[in-house]
Amino acid sequence: MNPLRVTALVQFAGVGFAVLGVAYVALPRRVHRFGFDFLRGSRSEGSEPSRAVVWAYRFIGVCLVALGLSYLF
Image (cartoon, one colour):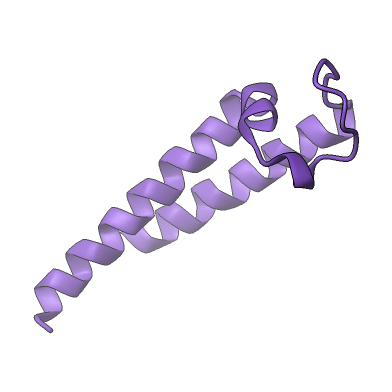
């Protein structure tokens, strides 16, 4: 495989990780509602995520942004 093509794919993945991380940081409640049902603790549809869950999503988002930026530089 062409090394230039591999580099472009890795950079594209880095951008994807960074964008996903920004979504996790900026919109944690929307990401929680969008997520898989089996990953949630409660089965009720109207429940809001707890503060701990929101901050966990934000932490995951920061980690994804850091991972994405590490692929770009």
